[in-house]
Length: 215
Image 1 (cartoon, one colour):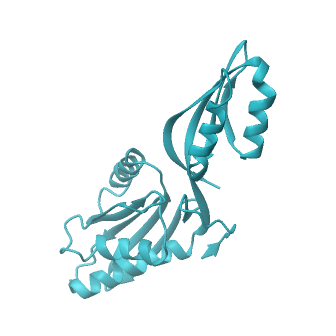
Image 2 (image 1 turned 180 degrees about the horizontal axis):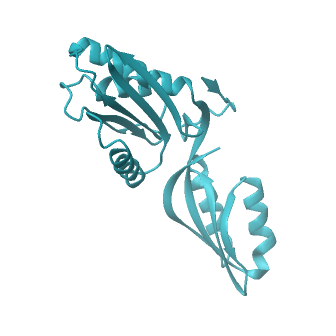
């Protein structure tokens, strides 16, 4: 497992994986293929699950767990037909023990003809998930808000100074007599920066949506 630590400790930061990683575990003929993905939305998760079910349509089970957000309050574990808590829970346990978020782990099982028992299944799903995480590069992510800033062209220098000071990432911009730009701002700074911009005459800042963004 490779860890990138940038010294960020605010409540809007989280640990996640940089890109997709894989793991594998075998026991008495059964094969467990683990796939770990960095994710941000339920829509993205559902799309990945659908693709894996299509690609590994002949597998016995597609068990998974995920956790989202810097607060880590949104999560789910799914056993996909395996005995209760024998698959999804140990997968989620690995996510929790490595303190990860914005991650989906799917373990695809091919049954080898021998029953492993609940204890054997727990070990298999846990070990396969751990292998995928150990093959991943851990990075620090920042939970961000997408801010829409509107201002007259005459305020461009003042607004861009704020953008630079706050290290905001501009997503798109439009400069005419009436200017607009969308920029990512780390969530812990959103309230103060919006107040600062909204105090400027003829300028305004609003939240477009909440997203998570890798640092």
